[in-house]
Image (tube, rainbow, N blue to C red; front, side):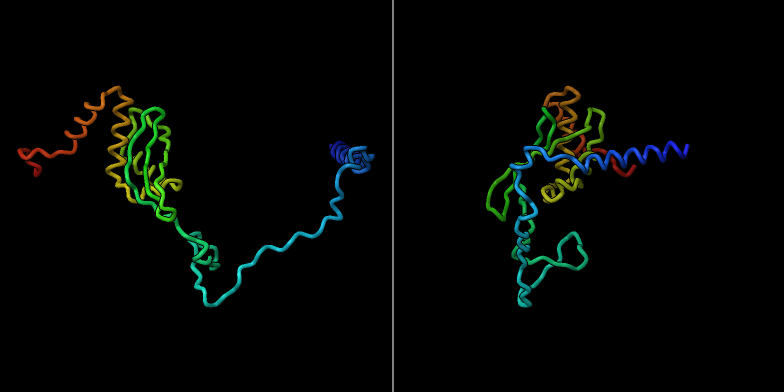
Length: 180
């Protein structure tokens, strides 16, 4: 069995040697010679000015910081938040303060059915690293309510029926004794 393994390794060496000793093709004459290419230019280095304060970035890159002029965290101010039923998604309209523009972000809702837990789905979306910075200003209750609308749609309820159900669940009856 060792002889077979030795034979196969010798065979692979022969194949490699044959590949290395390849005859030049007519196309090689048209290719540029890369050995004569000028050396790459060095990367641009930022000046190490002691007067410019350095700020550590959020990734925690071992103490190396970034110049604050070059690193600005995007600031989003949420304006409207809604739900799209087909295909299911949460839509956020926000203002980007760094650019002064109003933008729309569509966050698809995956693996959500008429039997899903709306509170858990809202928490997962709010804690999703892709959407976390955009949903900071949106309350968890509002996201949960949007997921209830989506679940009602998936159950075949009308919008009015879903709104009535939410109203019943969120209001407290003044006649009911909550101490029992």
